[in-house]
Length: 234
Image 1 (cartoon, helix red, strand yellow):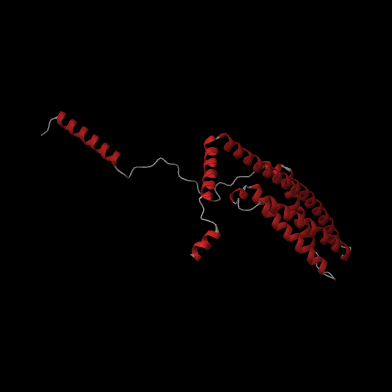
Image 2 (cartoon, one colour; image 1 turned 120 degrees about the horizontal axis):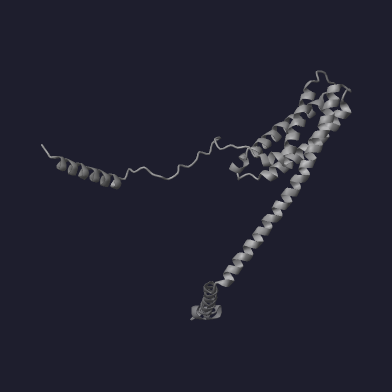
Protein backbone atom coordinates (compact mmCIF):
# COMPACT_ATOMS: atom_id res chain seq x y z
CA UNK A 1 0.00 0.00 0.00
CA UNK A 2 1.12 3.54 -0.77
CA UNK A 3 1.86 5.97 1.98
CA UNK A 4 -0.17 9.15 2.58
CA UNK A 5 2.53 11.42 1.14
CA UNK A 6 2.67 9.40 -2.08
CA UNK A 7 -1.11 9.55 -2.40
CA UNK A 8 -1.10 13.31 -1.84
CA UNK A 9 1.60 13.74 -4.45
CA UNK A 10 -0.26 11.57 -6.91
CA UNK A 11 -3.49 13.55 -6.40
CA UNK A 12 -1.63 16.84 -6.84
CA UNK A 13 -0.08 15.64 -10.09
CA UNK A 14 -3.47 14.42 -11.32
CA UNK A 15 -5.15 17.72 -10.50
CA UNK A 16 -2.42 19.75 -12.20
CA UNK A 17 -2.57 17.44 -15.22
CA UNK A 18 -6.33 17.86 -15.45
CA UNK A 19 -5.97 21.66 -15.17
CA UNK A 20 -3.39 21.71 -17.97
CA UNK A 21 -5.45 19.46 -20.19
CA UNK A 22 -8.55 21.52 -19.45
CA UNK A 23 -6.76 24.76 -20.31
CA UNK A 24 -5.45 23.33 -23.56
CA UNK A 25 -8.81 21.81 -24.54
CA UNK A 26 -10.47 23.57 -27.49
CA UNK A 27 -13.92 23.00 -26.01
CA UNK A 28 -13.84 25.74 -23.40
CA UNK A 29 -16.96 27.61 -22.29
CA UNK A 30 -16.98 31.05 -23.88
CA UNK A 31 -17.72 34.23 -21.97
CA UNK A 32 -18.92 36.13 -25.03
CA UNK A 33 -22.42 37.59 -24.59
CA UNK A 34 -25.13 35.82 -26.48
CA UNK A 35 -26.84 38.10 -28.98
CA UNK A 36 -30.34 39.04 -27.95
CA UNK A 37 -33.18 37.70 -29.97
CA UNK A 38 -34.88 40.27 -32.11
CA UNK A 39 -38.35 39.08 -31.29
CA UNK A 40 -41.21 40.56 -29.31
CA UNK A 41 -39.32 40.23 -26.03
CA UNK A 42 -37.73 43.68 -26.29
CA UNK A 43 -40.96 45.61 -26.78
CA UNK A 44 -41.43 48.63 -24.59
CA UNK A 45 -43.87 51.49 -24.58
CA UNK A 46 -42.60 54.95 -25.47
CA UNK A 47 -44.30 57.34 -23.03
CA UNK A 48 -42.53 60.36 -24.50
CA UNK A 49 -44.18 59.77 -27.87
CA UNK A 50 -47.61 59.16 -26.34
CA UNK A 51 -47.35 62.35 -24.30
CA UNK A 52 -46.18 64.39 -27.27
CA UNK A 53 -48.27 66.15 -29.89
CA UNK A 54 -48.03 63.36 -32.48
CA UNK A 55 -48.94 60.66 -29.97
CA UNK A 56 -51.98 62.54 -28.66
CA UNK A 57 -53.15 63.30 -32.18
CA UNK A 58 -52.77 59.64 -33.15
CA UNK A 59 -54.86 58.52 -30.18
CA UNK A 60 -57.52 61.14 -30.96
CA UNK A 61 -57.61 60.09 -34.62
CA UNK A 62 -58.07 56.41 -33.74
CA UNK A 63 -60.89 57.21 -31.29
CA UNK A 64 -62.70 59.61 -33.63
CA UNK A 65 -62.41 57.27 -36.61
CA UNK A 66 -63.71 54.36 -34.51
CA UNK A 67 -66.68 56.36 -33.20
CA UNK A 68 -67.52 57.58 -36.72
CA UNK A 69 -67.37 54.01 -38.00
CA UNK A 70 -69.63 52.76 -35.18
CA UNK A 71 -72.14 55.54 -35.86
CA UNK A 72 -72.32 54.73 -39.56
CA UNK A 73 -72.68 51.01 -38.81
CA UNK A 74 -75.79 51.58 -36.69
CA UNK A 75 -77.73 52.90 -39.71
CA UNK A 76 -80.00 50.12 -40.95
CA UNK A 77 -81.74 51.84 -43.88
CA UNK A 78 -80.36 54.18 -46.51
CA UNK A 79 -81.46 55.51 -49.86
CA UNK A 80 -79.21 56.34 -51.64
CA UNK A 81 -76.42 54.41 -49.92
CA UNK A 82 -73.35 55.56 -51.89
CA UNK A 83 -72.42 58.30 -49.40
CA UNK A 84 -72.85 55.93 -46.46
CA UNK A 85 -70.70 53.23 -48.03
CA UNK A 86 -67.98 55.74 -48.91
CA UNK A 87 -67.94 57.14 -45.36
CA UNK A 88 -67.84 53.63 -43.95
CA UNK A 89 -64.83 52.72 -46.11
CA UNK A 90 -62.94 55.91 -45.24
CA UNK A 91 -63.55 55.66 -41.49
CA UNK A 92 -62.62 51.96 -41.35
CA UNK A 93 -59.45 52.43 -43.44
CA UNK A 94 -58.32 55.44 -41.40
CA UNK A 95 -58.93 53.57 -38.15
CA UNK A 96 -56.91 50.52 -39.23
CA UNK A 97 -53.94 52.35 -40.79
CA UNK A 98 -53.68 54.95 -38.04
CA UNK A 99 -53.99 52.24 -35.39
CA UNK A 100 -51.11 50.31 -36.96
CA UNK A 101 -48.95 53.45 -37.06
CA UNK A 102 -49.82 54.22 -33.44
CA UNK A 103 -48.65 50.75 -32.42
CA UNK A 104 -45.48 51.06 -34.49
CA UNK A 105 -44.52 54.43 -33.01
CA UNK A 106 -45.82 53.75 -29.49
CA UNK A 107 -43.81 50.52 -29.12
CA UNK A 108 -40.75 51.71 -31.09
CA UNK A 109 -41.28 49.00 -33.66
CA UNK A 110 -40.42 51.44 -36.43
CA UNK A 111 -36.81 51.44 -35.17
CA UNK A 112 -36.51 47.79 -36.20
CA UNK A 113 -37.46 48.54 -39.81
CA UNK A 114 -35.17 51.44 -40.79
CA UNK A 115 -35.64 50.70 -44.50
CA UNK A 116 -38.99 52.52 -44.41
CA UNK A 117 -39.20 56.29 -44.14
CA UNK A 118 -41.74 56.40 -41.33
CA UNK A 119 -42.02 60.18 -41.22
CA UNK A 120 -42.97 60.26 -44.89
CA UNK A 121 -45.36 57.33 -44.36
CA UNK A 122 -47.10 59.18 -41.55
CA UNK A 123 -47.29 62.32 -43.68
CA UNK A 124 -48.90 60.45 -46.58
CA UNK A 125 -51.39 58.72 -44.30
CA UNK A 126 -52.48 61.88 -42.53
CA UNK A 127 -52.74 63.85 -45.77
CA UNK A 128 -54.88 61.24 -47.51
CA UNK A 129 -57.03 60.72 -44.41
CA UNK A 130 -57.65 64.46 -44.12
CA UNK A 131 -58.74 64.72 -47.74
CA UNK A 132 -60.96 61.63 -47.83
CA UNK A 133 -62.54 62.26 -44.42
CA UNK A 134 -63.42 65.79 -45.50
CA UNK A 135 -64.98 64.59 -48.78
CA UNK A 136 -66.85 61.72 -47.09
CA UNK A 137 -68.24 64.01 -44.38
CA UNK A 138 -69.48 66.53 -46.95
CA UNK A 139 -71.11 63.80 -49.05
CA UNK A 140 -72.79 62.23 -46.01
CA UNK A 141 -73.99 65.62 -44.79
CA UNK A 142 -75.58 66.29 -48.18
CA UNK A 143 -77.20 62.86 -48.57
CA UNK A 144 -78.28 61.98 -45.02
CA UNK A 145 -81.84 61.58 -43.77
CA UNK A 146 -81.46 63.69 -40.62
CA UNK A 147 -81.23 60.68 -38.33
CA UNK A 148 -79.25 60.79 -35.11
CA UNK A 149 -76.69 58.24 -36.25
CA UNK A 150 -76.02 60.06 -39.53
CA UNK A 151 -75.69 63.45 -37.83
CA UNK A 152 -73.32 61.97 -35.24
CA UNK A 153 -71.26 60.33 -37.98
CA UNK A 154 -70.98 63.65 -39.82
CA UNK A 155 -69.90 65.48 -36.65
CA UNK A 156 -67.24 62.93 -35.76
CA UNK A 157 -66.16 62.86 -39.40
CA UNK A 158 -65.40 66.59 -39.35
CA UNK A 159 -63.67 66.26 -35.97
CA UNK A 160 -61.48 63.50 -37.42
CA UNK A 161 -60.76 65.74 -40.42
CA UNK A 162 -59.55 68.48 -38.08
CA UNK A 163 -57.34 66.07 -36.13
CA UNK A 164 -55.81 64.68 -39.30
CA UNK A 165 -55.35 68.19 -40.70
CA UNK A 166 -53.37 69.35 -37.66
CA UNK A 167 -51.27 66.20 -37.80
CA UNK A 168 -50.60 66.79 -41.50
CA UNK A 169 -49.40 70.33 -40.79
CA UNK A 170 -47.05 69.16 -38.03
CA UNK A 171 -45.80 66.26 -40.15
CA UNK A 172 -44.96 68.64 -43.02
CA UNK A 173 -43.01 70.87 -40.65
CA UNK A 174 -41.13 67.89 -39.23
CA UNK A 175 -40.34 66.57 -42.70
CA UNK A 176 -38.96 69.95 -43.80
CA UNK A 177 -36.77 70.17 -40.71
CA UNK A 178 -35.42 66.66 -41.29
CA UNK A 179 -34.63 67.42 -44.95
CA UNK A 180 -32.88 70.66 -44.01
CA UNK A 181 -30.91 68.91 -41.27
CA UNK A 182 -29.84 66.15 -43.66
CA UNK A 183 -28.61 68.67 -46.25
CA UNK A 184 -26.74 70.57 -43.52
CA UNK A 185 -25.06 67.38 -42.31
CA UNK A 186 -24.01 66.49 -45.86
CA UNK A 187 -22.52 69.97 -46.34
CA UNK A 188 -20.61 69.80 -43.06
CA UNK A 189 -19.31 66.32 -43.92
CA UNK A 190 -18.12 67.52 -47.34
CA UNK A 191 -16.37 70.55 -45.83
CA UNK A 192 -14.69 68.37 -43.20
CA UNK A 193 -13.39 65.95 -45.83
CA UNK A 194 -12.03 68.80 -47.95
CA UNK A 195 -10.25 70.29 -44.94
CA UNK A 196 -8.74 66.93 -44.11
CA UNK A 197 -7.36 66.68 -47.64
CA UNK A 198 -5.92 70.20 -47.47
CA UNK A 199 -4.27 69.52 -44.10
CA UNK A 200 -2.51 66.34 -45.31
CA UNK A 201 0.53 67.23 -47.48
CA UNK A 202 1.12 63.64 -48.57
CA UNK A 203 -2.21 63.65 -50.40
CA UNK A 204 -1.32 66.94 -52.09
CA UNK A 205 2.05 65.51 -53.18
CA UNK A 206 0.30 62.43 -54.51
CA UNK A 207 -2.12 64.59 -56.50
CA UNK A 208 0.82 66.65 -57.87
CA UNK A 209 2.70 63.48 -58.81
CA UNK A 210 -0.31 62.03 -60.61
CA UNK A 211 -0.84 65.31 -62.46
CA UNK A 212 2.80 65.47 -63.59
CA UNK A 213 2.65 61.80 -64.64
CA UNK A 214 -0.36 62.50 -66.82
CA UNK A 215 1.46 65.38 -68.49
CA UNK A 216 4.52 63.18 -69.16
CA UNK A 217 2.38 60.45 -70.68
CA UNK A 218 0.72 62.96 -72.96
CA UNK A 219 4.12 64.26 -74.13
CA UNK A 220 5.23 60.71 -74.96
CA UNK A 221 2.15 59.98 -77.01
CA UNK A 222 2.55 58.50 -80.55
CA UNK A 223 3.39 60.69 -83.50
CA UNK A 224 0.84 62.75 -85.32
CA UNK A 225 -1.54 61.21 -87.91
CA UNK A 226 0.38 62.89 -90.76
CA UNK A 227 3.58 61.05 -89.87
CA UNK A 228 1.70 57.78 -89.60
CA UNK A 229 0.22 58.25 -93.08
CA UNK A 230 3.66 59.10 -94.44
CA UNK A 231 5.08 55.91 -92.91
CA UNK A 232 2.25 53.82 -94.38
CA UNK A 233 2.83 55.31 -97.87
CA UNK A 234 6.55 54.59 -97.64
